[in-house]
Image (cartoon, rainbow, N blue to C red; front, side, top):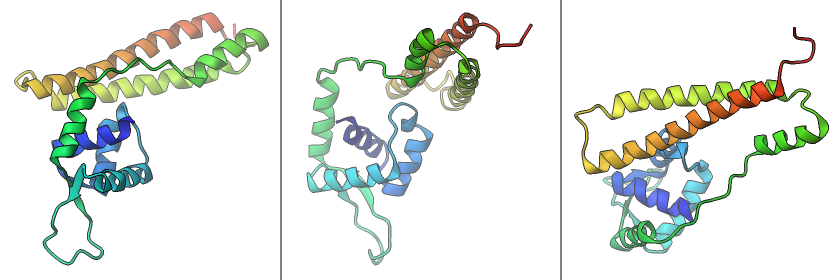
Length: 181
């Protein structure tokens, strides 16, 4: 249900083609709501058919040109209703957590390498978020919409910080690899 809302949000921020949306998902929205290019294009078709968005008129012949989409009032109304509506937290469903539980039963051989890999990935992601924060949210940029966008980014940073601390604790619990002194 949320992919159409992510697309409506992105289009309200800036009318875009499907390719531009896919690139924006890869650079920003995708950090917290991922979608493949195929999913985005499929959803654009549904939103257009449903009267939530429309293709903007093109300046030249339309054959072979990209369509740029904008949100219609019905799309804004849908997004506004969705923002104000209820939504329950989603349960965590992470294979790494299941691996940890399984390791308690069958042993943790080989798990240390996977924990270290995840730790490195979360450290990299946190560093990327910190670069984005410095670039996109300097102290002088503090409007209402910027505060909300910054808060989303800080939420991602908090999750990465949590995972780094948890993985560090997990590595301590697993102990040294076999054969290490």
